[in-house]
Length: 133
Image 1 (spheres, rainbow, N blue to C red):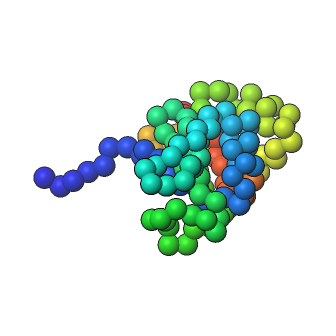
Image 2 (cartoon, rainbow, N blue to C red):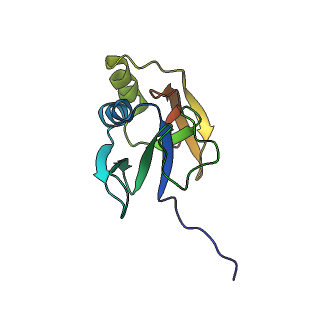
């Protein structure tokens, strides 16, 4: 039998400023910050949402093993939401976050999406999407 994958457990973002990233993803995107200490390693930070998490690496002080070229601002992430995009637009505007594009129709892993695009503090592209159009 050929091996197969079932889900994405976590991903790693290399960031310039851990505190600024944690503030953005918790205050703006509603994720939960969690500090954890892997065995034999110093404490690290993760951002949790749903059944997933984003581990954070400080640029220049990444944990091994790591990506071949870990740099802030290289990610393009799409997050799903049940909150209407009009509510997100209002929320983002209240926090001075610029919407770069959208709402626009897109195609996601399981079907149509309606999406808006913003940038995080490292200029990673963040897509916030509702399923169905």
